[in-house]
Image (cartoon, rainbow, N blue to C red; front, side):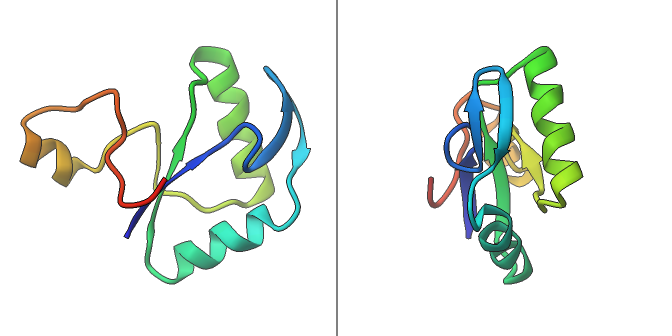
Length: 91
């Protein structure tokens, strides 16, 4: 299953663009879903420097994911392009 998970307010407590910390159990839940074989897409409106801050935070916290704001290459091939809307089974 492809899961698109929002960053601000779901994975992390934030005062945009500041990232205050990890929400309770977010890492454990996301990493368990990853380990079960689900594709994890971090879904956010963050771009540029705020997006870099988010990526650094995810990596520092050890949160596993496959993509950030990107559709799976297989889906872009099926639909003939990459839409700004993330294609997922569950948001």
